Length: 117
Image (cartoon, rainbow, N blue to C red; front, top):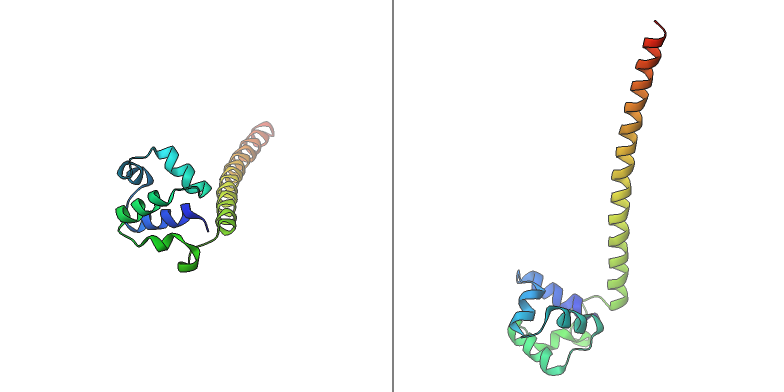
C-alpha cells in the first residue's frame, strides 16, 4: 500500500494540503512527506492524522481499504504522468519548430521571387 497516495486522496477530497496537515500534526512538511513516502509513520502519528482528518484509522491499511492503489501502481502512474508531460512538451516544441520552418519557407519563396525579377 502507498500511504502517501491514500493521504493525498483524502486531503484532496477535503480541499486541504499536505502543508496544512503538517502544521496540524506539529510536524515539518519534509518530515511528514518523507514518512508518508517511506511508509515509516509511527502508529501514534497515524492515529493523530486520522483524528485530524476525521476518518477511521483503518483506512490506512490495505486489508480494509482495497480500493486504493499499491505503491507499484502509484509509481507506474507517476511514470506515465511524467512521460505524458514530457510528450506534451515535445509536441509543443515540434509545433513551434514547424511554424518556424514554414515561415522560413515563405521567406525563401519571397527571396526567390524577388531575385527572379
